[in-house]
Length: 150
Image 1 (tube, rainbow, N blue to C red):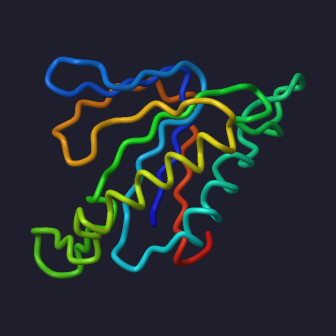
Image 2 (tube, rainbow, N blue to C red; image 1 turned 90 degrees about the vertical axis):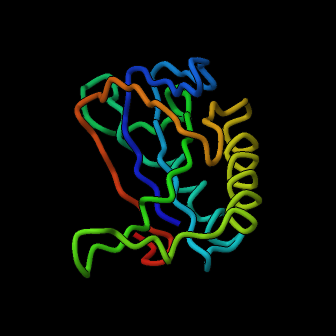
């Protein structure tokens, strides 16, 4: 599974002119699920996301996690994170999981995040044409890949 974490001061996702998820300070998480992903990948990623120390402390140093600051999470599914651009100019998405595999993993990821955070996690709609708006704070953008464990 690949994640792109963007530290934001606000973010929202809209589907067909309806806001489906909206947050203040926290992480906008773009999540791409690969056909080889497992529950173990999800557990590892949840710990990384909730404990990633990229929010400023009282001295302005990046020492706090999203949990430490009481921040919010907005998760948007994005199969294009598994694009292969090795050949030609048209990306291949062969590594991205099919919906019958990806949707249960996506839902499990959201449930694990909610359990870890102790509150609801905002979200987009899997497979929908979504419009994402954000105010990137910093900017701070972190890419995490559960296959590489980095």
